Image (cartoon, rainbow, N blue to C red; front, top):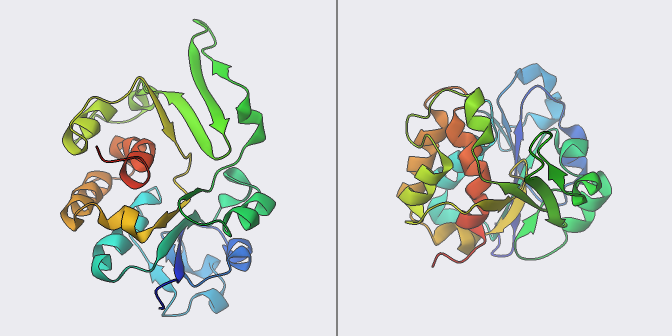
Length: 226
């Protein structure tokens, strides 16, 4: 790869990712967690197809690549999913966004620009505050649906470990964790940190720590460290 190359990591589970691949204008690797034969033969080339561990989420695939290629990253990484259309973003917005430079969120849902409130107590819950960025109350609402986390039971535990501060009351993140990240934003953290995160999101199927990491991605890859 040349210095200015972008590489896409497409995490996939039981989808035909052909539509996503057709909209990508750079080299890619498909990390396939599901049935291999669902992906067309033409996309299952040795240099661009990996049958990866089925963890229940896409974050493990991205972390695996970063850990294995930490010293030889492309200029930027595009993180996508085989079902990104229309779940997280429309095709038209995706095509436009991928041409932008720097850090780029790959989320767009026009209906979420209106704020949502708790159905009973009417407190603020969430809102897309600007294109690609989603603000949510950091109350661990999802934790009640999962087993208690082995490494970081609450999002506050992940903040304390890696950022040495409490989690904010409201947290901005990119739903789906699809984004374009410049390499300097990745290597500003040591590879050992990514190994710890990988362990935290793969010790069992879809642990609660995966939800936490999705909400911490901007703090790792965009916001200032200090």
